[in-house]
Image (cartoon, rainbow, N blue to C red; front, side):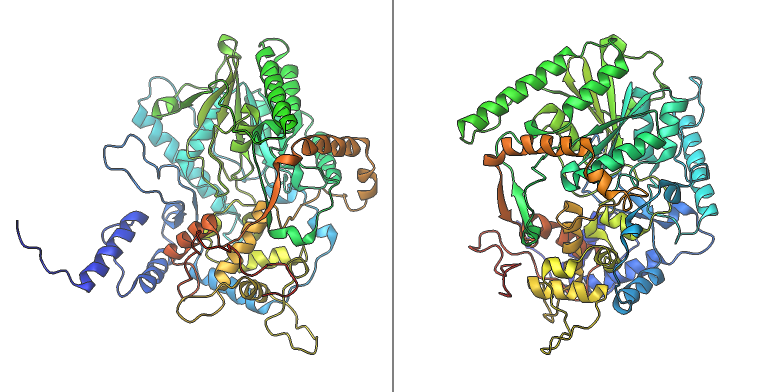
Amino acid sequence: MPRKKPFSVKQKKKQLQDKRERKRGLQDGFRSSSNSRSGSRERREEQTDTSDGESVTQQIRRLNQQPTHGSGHRYDPNRYRLHFERESREEVERRKRAAREQVLKPVSEKSLELDIGDIYHPGSNLDFPRRPPWNYEMSREQLMSQEERSFQEYLGKIHGSYTSEQLSYFEHNLETWRQLWRVLEMSDIVLLITDIRHPVINFPPALYEYVTGELGLSLILVLNKIDLAPPALVIAWKYHFRLHYPRLHLVLFTSFPRDPQTPQDPKTVLKKRQKRGRVWSRALGPEQLLRACETITAGKVDLSSWKEKMDRDAAGASRETGSGEEEEEEEGPAVLVEQQTDVALEPTGPTQERYKDGVVTIGCVGFPNVGKSSLINGLVGRKVVSVSRTPGHTRYFQTYFLTPTVRLCDCPGLIFPSLLPRQLQVLAGIYPIAQIQEPYTSVGYLASRIPIQALLRLRHPEAEDSGHEPPWCAWDICEAWAEKRGYKTAKAARNDVYRAANSLLRLAADGRLSLCLRPPGYSDQRASWESHPETLELVMMQGRVGLSGEDEDEEEELSSSGEEEGEEDRDADEEGEGDEDTPTPARPSNLACPNPYALLGEDEC
């Protein structure tokens, strides 16, 4: 056996650097110079500085890097990564300075009212890319080349009409847009899923006009996660969309209903409801969706099997609740899952024949993190689709046969171009929080609209014992939260403000620090919406469904330094976007007390 060669610490360090660079998908020529953190900082400088002559494609930041499985693997996991426009280092540094210097001031309730015309500018270049015309005489290579040219022209029009500071984050990956094209071509009915906290962000008018006009399909707007918003606001949004978009069918939906009349203690901001038993079978909204599909199909498809399935799920959930015992979720009838490959992306054109073979195909589209996969699980009655709060988790579309005559098609989340502030996009969960370069201004945006300091009982870092509290800025809130939670950097033991900012943004994305946008004129008509008959009906409906599963829910304090968040923090650290000191690793899960700080207690920190 040959003798092993000596292996120095310097060689080992270089080996680890090469391994990290391969995982990020960098070219062989990219090598860091001194240490991992300084090397990552240099890589950011090289990748951020762009000249005026570069094309739009060269200024893209690719997120959610996935490890490859060798050259023989049938599927490239990085093919559908999120592609956003790269921000210059100067812009990131400018926002960091603003987070330290700008004093936060509460905004009026009127500022929470958002008009869709101010975001999307209907009729402008803020459109979405369409598949260019083609014919069956074209080869696959010709078709792909034509689509790429058309997509580059589309990006050029948008970036030529608006500056980078005006534009929001939006998808620059052509492969993901091709998924949308195929889903729309396959579908008989299109489901556009939105988050009720900000449905105006998730509703692009260009898609509405294209689906209902050019394609001639029926569009169902699903206002999802209605348990995270006041019932009066839910009804107000419902009538707002019904008034301005008359061709819509509207459905209210939530996979985790709860009684809205139950008083919410502000101390439970960091309490996460733990679900037991048949959590997906208690979804609120499948009946409304069935009625909408029955209206659209007008008897052309037999949907009785869907109704029978819901009756079986309801009977099984009631038996489990009545027994008072925790039972493991039954498998139930098998759900046929079809993972679509490149064959499904071959040119076929929009389907001319509706309800082929007596099967209705329902395409589920929408922005990332609006609950598309959770909605499918709620319709099926159990978990068949993996869910994650990280945008871009669903990377290619799949089809699920809910019943022999109902097929669901899950499309990856797509971000349409708009003029929305990027801070609000981050709060809406559109951008992966672990990979945000500058999270502090988003925290400031949130703190000026909801009282974070009071909800979390934060103490100003520079507060004196005399009781006088200095004015708050976004950086102060992050530093106070880091002090409260005990987030420290490993080297200098300073408050890890980057990790604290990420923690606050995750609380906002999860709905525990809830920021709800409102339709225009809501503040003046709040009383009438609160006394609206449909508001009272929704309260009663949520109360019935929420109480039916009361024995299965429990409140358990969620430590933001737990296992799941620790994974995201490590991802952020690998990207080199954190504080200059290395953050402390996540607390091991085998410790007796997962959260030693008694977060919202009487100053026990």
